[in-house]
Length: 155
Image 1 (spheres, rainbow, N blue to C red):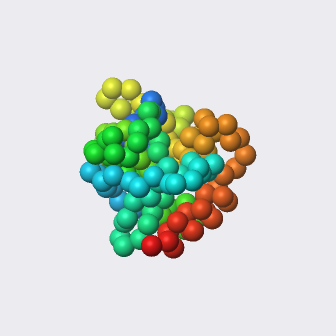
Image 2 (cartoon, rainbow, N blue to C red):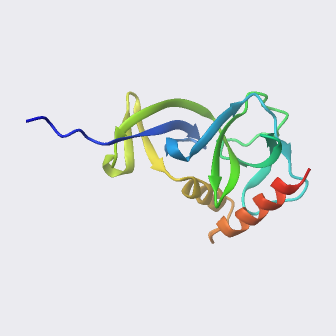
Image 3 (tube, rainbow, N blue to C red):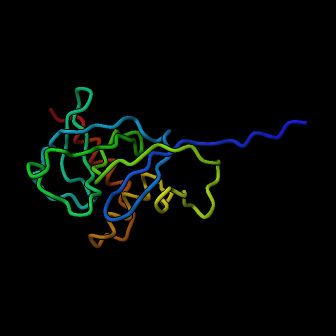
């Protein structure tokens, strides 16, 4: 009798805003580096810092870094491309660490790493957490979807 194989999933491990996070690889549409983003000219209460051009369209940038910097101050920006409500978004992170495969349900919502652990998160959860840091407790996802849609149609 053979041992039953455990189902595993892949996670992208990254640092952002002082934390280490694990985002399911299925949620990742790509990774970009070495690009500056164009800051918004108006304040966005849903956490959008600016835009970058990806695949011939404008994509909103959500800055999740520990210390957000002006776009021209850090030429080594790292973006994790993902989608929220059907809209492509670029998450600006501090550092990409690894891609790991773990059992389907990581114990306690954390993934053990050689030097610590990573919190398993969703894109929506990360964005809500970041926006809450700026005093917005209510859900920003509807506003984010609308703002992202408006940005992506601009040329």
